[in-house]
Image (cartoon, rainbow, N blue to C red; front, side, top):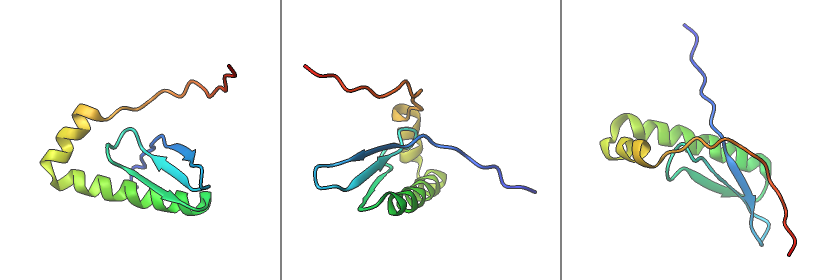
Length: 82
């Protein structure tokens, strides 16, 4: 039987030191950082797997998922000059 794939939206930012940070709004507390985008992709994938694993055994985390998780609809990104 084929394994069902899941998709998650990821928010990626870059801080003032050049590090990339990723978070997954659908999985509270699921975030990581890395020096490169390719390393960030690897790390956020690992973080997602860990969060999903915790969700299978931790009742408190499942409650947090129900209360705080969100799956944002991407609207866009704008720069505003004032």
